[in-house]
Length: 141
Image 1 (cartoon, rainbow, N blue to C red):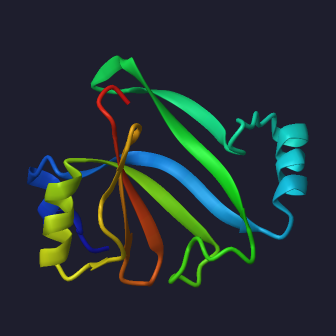
Image 2 (image 1 turned 135 degrees about the horizontal axis):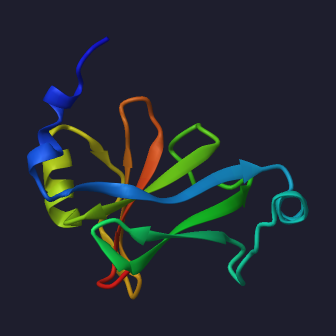
Image 3 (image 1 turned 135 degrees about the vertical axis):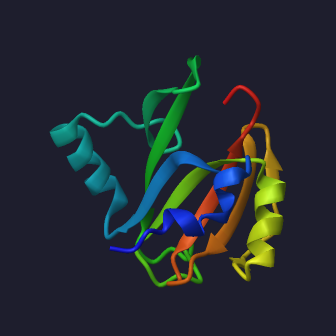
């Protein structure tokens, strides 16, 4: 078994992933599948069609984090250029610093950092072509 912890250049940096912010995947019929999850697993969907799961921040228990779960119609191009049927959103800190390091490491950055009231986002590809969304929540999120 290899020890990959020694290869983690981010371990000494504050620019890193801190958790999972969302899980997104394709569905043949998103509305019917949402109904199935609501009926069978008790998912509650917001007006945007996502279901949120709450947890407390380990280092600051007053902060409530959410993990978003969302379905996209199978024909959507939302995960392009990835050919995979899922995309994971990772919560990160110090997104600009992280993106600079990713560029230095030759990671494919798919777009510019976008900023919204609820945080900053950028999309990248891992070495197997999985599209990943990196999200730095707005202060307090």
